[in-house]
Length: 305
Image (cartoon, rainbow, N blue to C red; front, top):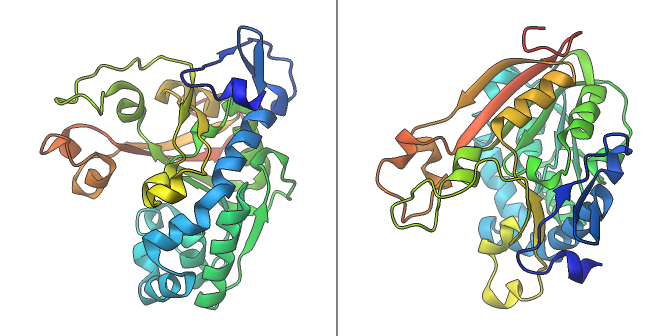
């Protein structure tokens, strides 16, 4: 099935069966059906192929990167500190926490940090990073939807290229709600769908040539592939992702008993790196490349609590 699923340009539509268990929510094209477990298995292969090598190419060996983070841990997590306030003694879980740089910085600032990520290759880099920095983090290699932990976290953090690995957002937000304390906070920062779904980044004038409401599952290069040599890229399988609209994200959060405290559609020079070098000058001031959502749990599935 893997070869059929990842054939170029394949995509899958929702079956509409809302009674399926979380990990069997499915997309179907023709006779091919793909559920969340199968999607996660495909993406696990991609993220285990060469993530350690990619981070080493980008940041150097974990010991070298740890030294840089130790010099200024505040810089590594500066975007999140206004929402976290003081990390000291807070229990923070970083879902899909990748190479662990945010987790290590937060641990250096006194937080008790857990990471959950499906990639053992990511975990290898993160654990070596933490050891070199002289801090302890708990790194759990698992599909986020399969992890079982108590409702003990002050903060759940997800960032940069996370939601598109899920066929259905409901099980993810349910899991996050289960991980948070009663007064806990979700901080979600991701690529803005205006950029990922609508703008034609390959178009010379960056026209809005995409389909914002497209629900297809897309085959794409794994995110870290740009950090690999051509030889390293050859052995890395593609990922399969589903991009979400901002309305779908907010509506599902509300349905899962979250109160959205802030939605920041970002602009400014700090997000210039999101756009290709060929993008028009000043686009980072005019188009949101990123967004940040801060949400807390509430009794009713309403934006107003």
